Image 1 (tube, rainbow, N blue to C red):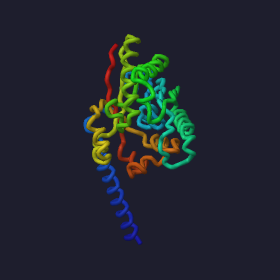
Image 2: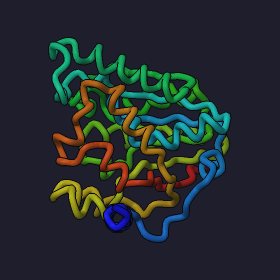
Image 3: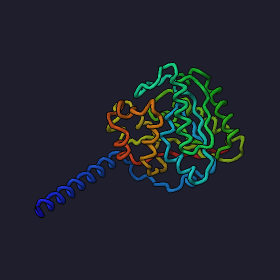
Image 4: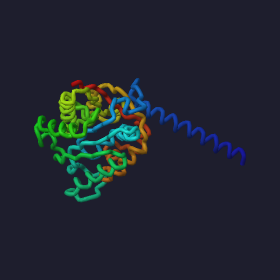
Length: 274
């Protein structure tokens, strides 16, 4: 019996070592090399008021760690979301498609409440049609209106040429956020931090196919990284119930596993001078 127990213990130890080795290898595939790890979001962005400008409900999942830490550090944090997500594909189907916009806006607002956001703005532009809904000048002016009202020190948005996924709505909102931040800094007479949320280039090049390889090629180098709390990411997908299986359906990897491998959020920072 003693030998049997020792055998079980040894097998368990070997299994643990193998699991840890697999995690280390998987994380090494997703990690961006030589990126500074930030421990304070407000210091990394030099900001106490932060506005995130995105296109769709669930886009804010790209920044759950940044939002959570900024809130914990006492910053004012708000989101501006262009659409209600009414044209999205449901993963899994939970509502008649004609009501999806109502549901996804509700998911967005529920997630924002869970994260502790101070304010959430939904512009109500057509999902999948942001670039056609307004001219770039009009869209910039609409985003600028919210920046002037919310008075951020930092704006977080999509990198315009890559948009995290080459989605036209993402890229349109990235362009509008950049142009609006430039005008806002001039009006304010002070520099404003602009940060782009980025994907893991090594991971997307390896697993994302041709589309995400293109995203990786277009992205700038990250300025800083944040170690993520994986539970924030998995909670976000549960709250966004109409998209809960999105990662599994589109990548073949469930969210709980992905965030054991992709363990950091990455951001590229630029300072917008007046």
